[in-house]
Image (cartoon, rainbow, N blue to C red; front, side):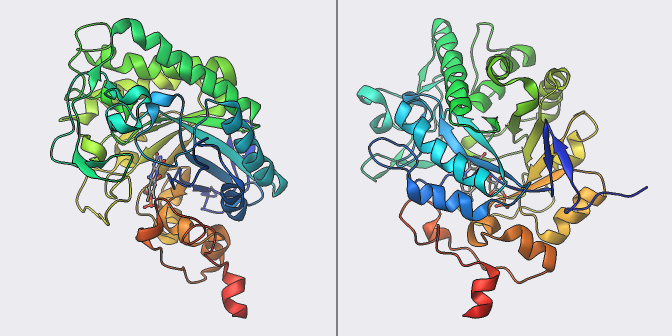
Length: 374
Ligand SMILES: Cc1cc2nc3c(=O)[nH]c(=O)nc-3n(C[C@H](O)[C@H](O)[C@H](O)COP(=O)(O)O)c2cc1C
């Protein structure tokens, strides 16, 4: 039997990919202001990272105005945002790439200064993120506010926003969408017991806490068909105040619910990396999402978190994952697939330019060949 490698082809939904190295979704906070529409600089960034038959997962994009918690994040709920994304998608397609968009609502990971009308952010329950600071719209570091718990009657409106955003992504020409159910944001706040104290059908039992994820996923599938929809989860994550005391029963149930839908893929964030990249965290001796959940998930499995070319290739050869998404080293190496394939040295990334700004640390990282010529 021939075991696949990082450079073996892979079918994801209807797409025949040429290699197994994806661009992880990466928030870069460089959309146009105040429209929060992607602009030519963003198009250039994605086009630089596109390869024939390679999968890019575009950054988390709020599905509605209450879904933001940071400045300069692109949305996917207005016409201007949809046409900005169309330019990105066309440029990636021109290079033969495949591009999915990550759909986002931050829930409590926000501040009232980002909310329409300056009201409190919404969440499953009125539980603030303790011990962490957030930024206001004018850049001050402040403690998180206690969010407002959503009324049961408001939840269908949020699911509708995901549905409409999925339609916008379709109109923008994307090849699929990924539902952001990871890193402590709204969907994960519903999933996990410490952030979901609800007593209605969306809280309490594991079945009830999984309901919001499933309703969002089914709404998006109605628009796209299941084979062009992915879901991202971070079962052992610690980002943005996450942390389920015993993730195994919760995530086993969620994955068993997702299994029969026939999704394009399930995408994990391995808990050994920080998840959001705000600090250099490489936790040792932590559980591995792919090791624990690979036997439960029946479809294509993508995972991310601190991989190198060697460890990514090993994970695929060992059958632990089908595809590896790269975040930080894909930021600083626009031609990452080629560099890993040929063993070329990697350019280190500059954390200071991850979030916000212009070209510096975004579109000015050279390709290997440019470095050779220099
Ligand atoms: C700057 C930055 C922004 C990120 N933004 C997102 C995001 O929008 N959505 C998401 O699911 N994960 C996000 N992540 C997590 C990455 O997708 C990825 O899982 C993480 O960086 C681990 O992969 P790596 O070790 O290859 O960087 C972000 C990470 C970084 C460093």
